[in-house]
Length: 102
Image (cartoon, rainbow, N blue to C red):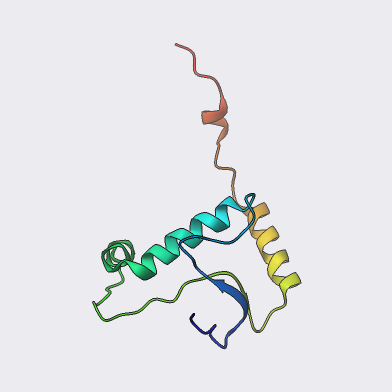
């Protein structure tokens, strides 16, 4: 197992077979994706190339889920996530939510 970096006070390593509750679908999905990126060089290169990051064959990737940074507590992190979620626009705009008749 990888050692958690010192700038994190909490977090779990990403796993191909996550050990979380069945209701945590998003956490499971991102854990599988991150673990796949960590394990498969071609996947890591393709995904990171799409955002302009070059990855060499000897590069390593550490992946963590549900992280808490050392300089903030869990309550602050939860509040930031809640505020971000409330400020994001709805993915369904009013144009798309109306029924289209032909």
